[in-house]
Image (cartoon, rainbow, N blue to C red):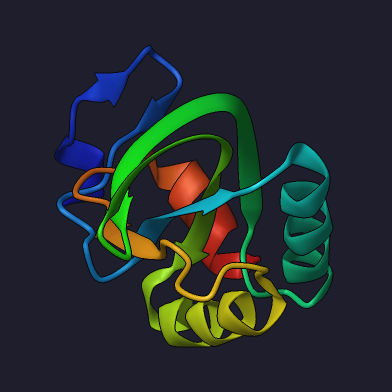
Length: 121
């Protein structure tokens, strides 16, 4: 079946829907330094394959009845779906916020070789 899939960019093939295979987990941090620290520990412990750190995120939200406007850093963690719970538990222990954002989105389509790499790592 994979042989019948259209090529993406002439190099690799996307697999059929793979929500069972990979997730992207969003998590905001108060600083680049803290995001790097937590990401480094997560990668060292083998709990995610990759973390992208995106500084310059502006977050507007309600916290304890007050509207907040904060500069934050977004971490995008790439993880095999069956590793989400362990990743979540580790972030909760390492994160400085009382209630950190940990939102996992199942990947619907992923290039084959990249999915294999994420699941292997």
